[in-house]
Length: 286
Image 1 (tube, rainbow, N blue to C red):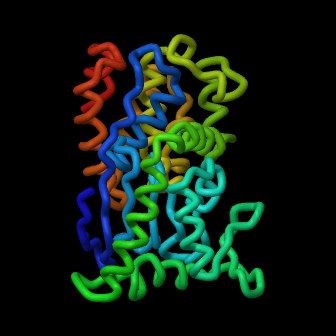
Image 2 (tube, helix red, strand yellow; image 1 turned 120 degrees about the vertical axis):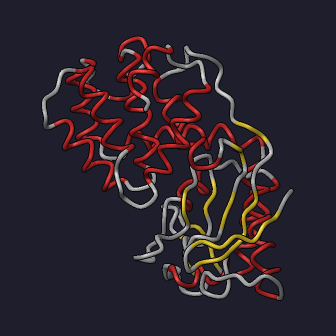
């Protein structure tokens, strides 16, 4: 396992990249599987067990990188819900044991609490534990070693093969639950579906399939901004083919955060795949 210290903006922490790739079978995979896989590729290179603690989120893990805390609000993130869903293998139990030793436990609703009094563990305490001090891990010393120890525990739990299916299923579930109202309108208007869970390549058509896969790969980075883009394009009431083109271009040309670079990574990978017909890729991906 390669352990690296990485700096990002004002933060610094540990990165461990997984060794095993999540591979989806072929072009017959469902739309939701494709969307989750493309999201995972953009987030982690689709490498199982990739973890990081260098971006102010305390710890990120899972196929599509769930976060322990939100860096700005310090509220607990979705990583805890995912952790609570994993089977209690020996490696996962080892992580739980370490949390217990710290004086923390995960309750039935997957909220991290203090063993002493049941209080919710504040985000700044979580960040200071996994990426000490306060999200800026030094290049050496006690705090560096502490951050590495935690990163290894998370990496081992999430690289355990017995946890992979759950990670994938939870990634798909997350895509279905995020902003389902506007996304359901899109699937209903352009694919005559009452619910996104019914989506497959066959009934979406390749253009809508690819466009919404690109959308989902952005939505995990900023759900609010992605929703805004999707809503704006949907409100134009375009024909299906034009909607797909407009959605991809609106995401790829967006100046929010590092979205232009994110699109470049996404587009480059799509062009190497055989999941979508070449004429569809050539039409949508610039």
